Length: 137
Image 1 (cartoon, rainbow, N blue to C red):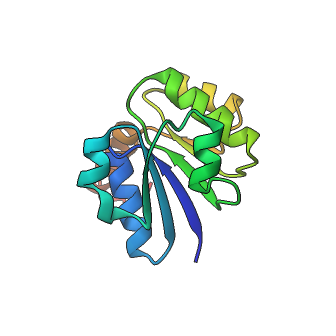
Image 2: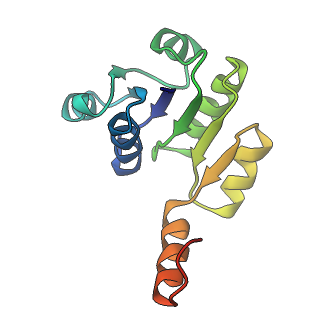
């Protein structure tokens, strides 16, 4: 059983958290919006209201020693950048960041993110392959 940190409880983050939880992993979520914390309290082992750009909030939530972190915020580029740096500084080895474009993805990877996910692009590629009769991608 792994321990994962998910930052942000929008549609993407909530789906990642709930799926990891359903697969039997320990999931810790950090979300700034109290209403989202209340709405999705059951999607993870623990849901913490707080600012994920603050290293002390991350440390207190259990980021140190997590197998991986997923930054799924849709707020601002600055929030994702600062959370990436804070997680990297805390020694989280695997950091996955939701990006809005290839340019953002390159920036996150230059900052030490393991990988960037562009949900709309990734879903579009998968759909095109399904339509063309080639599963995968």
